Image 1: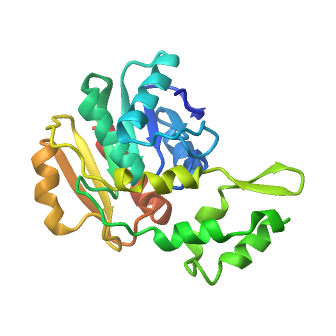
Image 2: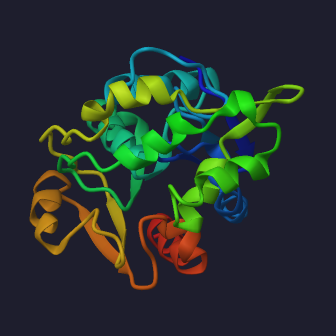
Length: 253
């Protein structure tokens, strides 16, 4: 599947892969900063953003989508930055297509499987009566009690768009994402990776714990794991300056 993407800057290419329920717009600020040094391609993964919807939502398929999109752009080798689910896509990419990847930055995602933890979020999305709503503000008001965390609520609201006059729709294929959640939360294969890889975790997040480091290092043989102290799961958005500094320090080395 050819993915929708945004392209900024010139130079050596970097591909940015967003997380679950996200899309390329979530990375606008970081992509702009990185475009001062690199050619940046920010994609919408399948079933997200402006890319096509499909019944299949596996990491193998998502990785192949990225390769197909790079082929269409005649790009042979890239650095890859991936956040959360996008980080797991990036890890599958380097395992399946090692010759296409130079360096990898994985943002707040480990190699282990994760327990289901999106039930309330998914139910809230399902429950929004979009057929009765005519303004974004109404959706925000509807979600306040169901999703009290303002950052999470605003993150979801970015997915709303006007499919036609007076009719809102979600940019994400929530039905397929929900049905494939076991696959999305699954562990990475144990195929060893020798590429230089930087794992950046948020100190306020529980996605990568101290006890996870050994397992990560057993798969990624040339990796660094760094913690940003004042950030949670959305490290790049919560601590943008420190995220950019650490990412560039690693990529430009």
